[in-house]
Length: 469
Image 1 (cartoon, rainbow, N blue to C red):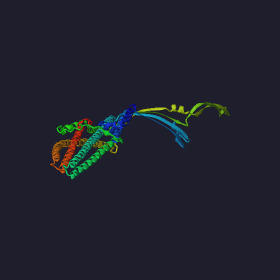
Image 2 (image 1 turned 180 degrees about the vertical axis):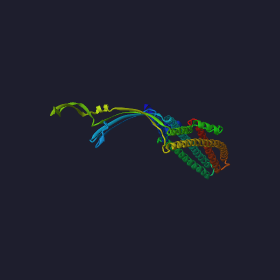
Image 3 (image 1 turned 90 degrees about the horizontal axis):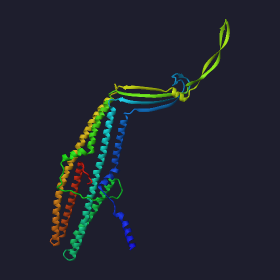
């Protein structure tokens, strides 16, 4: 008994991974696609670049600070940098300086640049969200396409099973002598057609799964979770204006276009600032070194003979004199002795710039007009897309009504023909024809139901509803 229990537990444990394959929800598919999408990743990089531009624009308010230094060897007739005198020998020199500056006035260029960078960051975030939303819609449509393909597979398999059952029933009637032997040929042809439809439906399902895996950028063998597809004929379809207003209020692409217009208008102010004077304040500290520099190292007393006349007679007197003793001035001493500071204001007034500034202003104004036209084009494209979506949704609803009636009529004909066939009043050709018509009507009904469902989901996207529900 213990061995049998252990064997059963082992068998269940081995079979469990195959049966417990995790199903992918629509939300998980969307998250996976967003994480792996190259388009979304590039959009994020664009956002990071705009954020860097914003930080750079803000830093322009702060003073700049730079340190420069250099070492030089001079030959021939050169100027000693410590004494500014000519020398005809080799000189080794060094110089170091620390400089800083701050812009006091530039006609608001820095503030306008910061405001424009902030708008560009916000627009970049909106463009990123737009890319994510568009990807979510595409993933959702493929997800629902898989559901449609799976339903087609189920229907095709059911028809194949019914065709097999019909063959068995016909065989029984032939063996009982109620039908001739050639009656089974029509049903065998129907079974072959059903098997072909199963293969075609399975191929369509595999193709839909392949498309989903490509969007998710994964090689994993995934299976999605089945969700109920509701496509009620009586469901209301919102009017175009309601959908358009909701889309304009929430779609990131429209808001990004509006921000681009504001950003381009700031570009005009930035271009005009180049026509105004610029006032800056700055200061510097510097020092230098020269290999020719000397320092006093004391005095040396020497006796210098000097001829004089005493009472008309020549004489030589020895006169003591102090002669300064010089030696090389050390590097640290020179840095301290030559240390200097400066401070000042600088005013730069543009007078004539070869039409560059004026042309920049004109280009900025053209950019404003282009941004306004881009916003108008985005609104127009959105309105035409919504008009088309609402029209298609209403047409899909009418198509579903017609498909429902056609399917009900085909089922009634099939039931009547089946009763006649069972009673011997109808032949196999009539029965297979009725079945074929019923199959076509069922396919049309399924297609119409999913078509309306797809069209409603597109409207839900523009209305801001959750596509995964």
